[in-house]
Amino acid sequence: MFCAAIVGNAAAAQVVFAVLPDEPKNPTAEQVAESSIIIYGSRPVLEQIRRNGVERGRMTRVASDGKIEESTYERRFVRGENLDKDKVRVDQKLPNIEYSLIYGGGKLFGLINGATFTPREEAVASFMSQHEHSVDSLLRYKENGSTLTLVGKDKQKGIDLYILDVTDKENRKTRYYISTRSLRVLWLEYDEAPAPGATPVKYTKKFFDYRYAQQTLVPYRTILLEDGKQTQETQILTVTYGVKVDDSVFRNPEV
Image 1: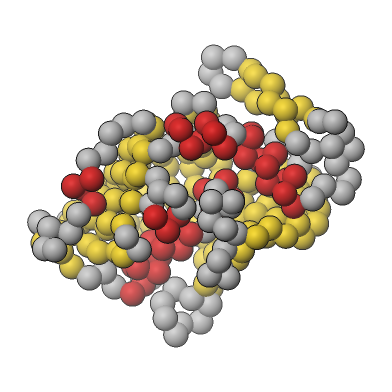
Image 2 (image 1 turned 60 degrees about the vertical axis):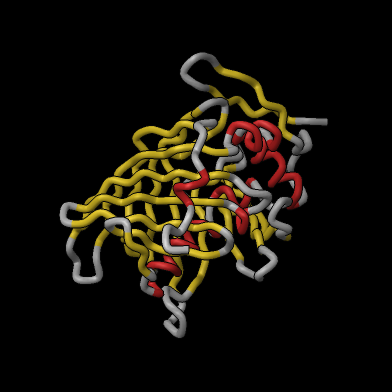
């Protein structure tokens, strides 16, 4: 037996059949995860459509001194067999500087004015945590070899939620709060030190303005909180999947 979740795009509404039972009082962790994956586009569609792509947007960040930093960014990526094998390049433009952070082969390096540099420990930790604790970490849990734990159900601000923990092979845990009605991830949480040896921080990512992009569901606005305080907001302006991304953009020019 199945239940149907209604989703829509600009063209028309479509019915997506999820794998939850008709009376989902006691669904398994896998049923919740797989149903959510279907709502985001289904595993085959996500794998095909999001194989590579380009995302452009703007970012607002609150610096440690309280100043507001505004920037634009371009994110190019090629999807690997799992998150560890992805290739990602983020070009960021601030009012007084432009630089790139490039991840591939399990390594992260920076590029500025054509020369490479080693990012600060905090920058590395921030980049990697954004990559490892994401909606994609749920959508690709099987590819990543992650384990699932259904913590239970809850109701917050009138919204019924599934609470699902995803733990990867490195024992990094991300907790997802998933609407029981729409099966969308509304927010996620994880605890992590912002730098080696630092006190762990509770990070919360909240997702808004869900839209369909090439048959897949994308949150166009994301807010990041650190110990309950908002520190970053990201707004996607355009995202295009299936765009050829030359492998050279991920290479270290000094290697």
